[in-house]
Length: 241
Image (cartoon, rainbow, N blue to C red; front, side, top):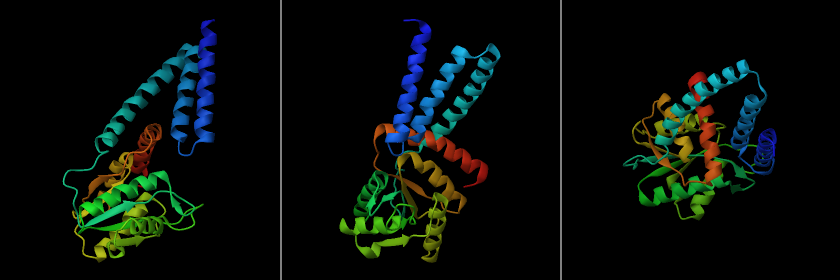
């Protein structure tokens, strides 16, 4: 088989995999985009002119260096901080499918349940509004799940207006300030890949939080979310949200 046929077959396989992750699985968009980018590089370095190859190589190297720096921040913070006990735990919402928590939300709830059982004096702010395809707010879904798992209702505070992570934190912090919460008496629970960005946002609002890591999801899905965080952090640094 000719060399050209090998790389063409590789491109075809990458395209098929990208289509599979995008069209057949929920939440794997960034894996799909990454596969298409690899296919693009293969095409450039097999078909492109010398000047195009040099430009693409330089831009790709700069992009990869930036990506590695950002991912270092994300990965190094993708864990529960030492001594995470605080009076209040903000649980950041995720998608609800009908009346049921999505897999991401279920993993966060499982960690929230462990935290509240470990620290029985702590209370939780359950943060998340109602989005498209959701029969109830993310906050209410979390409330019902935790109550059915044995957590007392009086330990749960609902914040059901937010539509983004920044609003999650802003509206939750407003509720906590009304309760007299100190900036350093807050813990934030989210998925491991999301913790650095969430804590960065919280600090911009006046909090000094610790992070609590949700249970890890499927490895390939989680990899895609780590890739996405590079873009999410860039957006935060440029636009402030």
